[in-house]
Length: 418
Ligand SMILES: [Fe+2]
Ligand SMILES: [Fe+2]
Ligand SMILES: [Fe+2]
View (tube, rainbow, N blue to C red):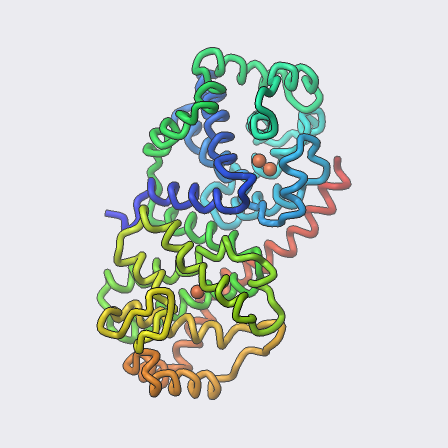
């Protein structure tokens, strides 16, 4: 059995995306529901294809972490909202198993009249998604939106006749607007996503994509998560954890800072040490991680993820647990998190060298803060650990750098194209 089920991966994604911004709560879910029903009426796609498109639609705004752009996205006239479309596209293309559907996200704000000229194999679904997205924006902005008028006003310009017909058929048959209004679509969406069946590799890819896309809000956090996972993996191996424990440690490490989706960017990116008040806000990320993951992952992974700031003497947060209450994988992640932070470059500090890092963890161990056995293991094998960490983080760190450079090029190309 999978350690985290496919259905719960979808649930974690849904819950996390709903935290991007208050104004986007359930937006991705409503849009994916609308698209699902539009496609179901067409009798042209297999169930599997429809499910892939529906899931892509759920993720369509995954690149939307910049607030300035969010302001524009939720207005009807979407002038220059390429930023989140391009990031969403790059995340799907390079970090998910949905690479062949990524253009659906890239073009989800492109008018039909322009989309038509691009000859993208994903053009049709992108156009449907655009209509579904704009319908939902109208629903969000008005008590009594005139959807027919919206479609008539922009027929053949923003929306194709085909997309409009698909929506009308679906609404007639399934009363989709009514289900959105009374919220019953959420139940149905649960049923739809019960059908997803990801492989172990896909589960891991989706979770990584989710974490990296959150971490994209701040360059420092991306590096931090990638490095923490790898250090935890290495220590777990060296301390002879059983395969199952290594596996839950890996997932706990991957998900440990997921709650940072709610931490304001100026705090994540502060070019200095945080003030007490900022630190208190920062500490909330652990509670948020529990909120996001609590219902959807098994307790042993959850506890690893949310205990990474606990200290053996009870002085950590947010529960102030003591050493008797902490398991070895939990203690390993706490140290991996510290080492990763010390290795990381911040705008106000260079990365620390080996000697400084070992001095700091040795002091923390002597002061009863962190696990002495784990610290001993790190001291004995530091070079080996870091060599393997450099090897295994090489690929994700390069994908990250690549996404950043591709973003700039694509942006120029697309803005000039349309
Ligand atoms: Fe969008
Ligand atoms: Fe959207
Ligand atoms: Fe943390």
